[in-house]
Each structure stands twice: as structure tokens, then as C-alpha cells.
Image (cartoon, rainbow, N blue to C red; front, side, top):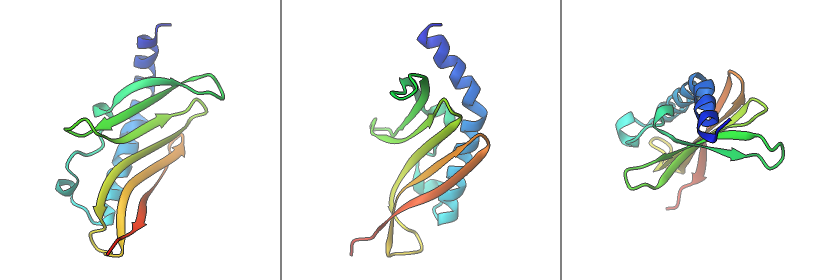
Length: 127
């Protein structure tokens, strides 16, 4: 099977879950207190640039997508592993909107199958 066919197959196989993961990341962003307009570009599964990366442990081809901003700077990624688990991270890089002692670096999502967990990655704010 060609790489392009395998990439297309894996994209379609993970599209529904990937869309759900992006929705959960967005819910977490909003729950933190940011509006959609404050974030700018939002994580959308179809807008990621996808490739296959060989897992050094299993030798399986894993689907990995990267989100880029308008300046072509990477702002997030989503990865589906051959064991059915996934990991995603989307950069926020803004002061927390309601808790001034925190800086929101990113929102992470992980899980397996339909079980999706998310959390913000917080750093102490510099004053």
C-alpha cells in the first residue's frame, strides 16, 4: 500500500474521533475563560497538515497532524498511535483570563478510543 493511500485511509479512520478531540480542546479553552476570538485560529481536525510517522517501538505508521498559524509557526499537534490511544496539544500562550497568577501555555488532550481527557498546561505568571 502506498504512503498516500495509507495516509488517506488513516485520516478517514480517525476523522470522527479527531473532530471530537478538537471540540473537547475548544470546550476547555472556553471553560478557562477565553472567547473564540481571543484565540484566533482554533483547532480543527481538517485544517491540520497530516503525515505518517513510524513508531520506533512498534514500527507501525502513526497518523500525526500539525496545526500552523498564518506565519507557518507550529501551534499544535494531534497524534494517533497504533494501540488506539491519542495525544493532542494546542498552544494558547496567553495570560489566564481570570487567574492572573497563571499563564496558559497550551491545552492537552489524551485518551484511548472515545475516552477523551483534556487539561490546560499552566505556568506561574511572571510579574
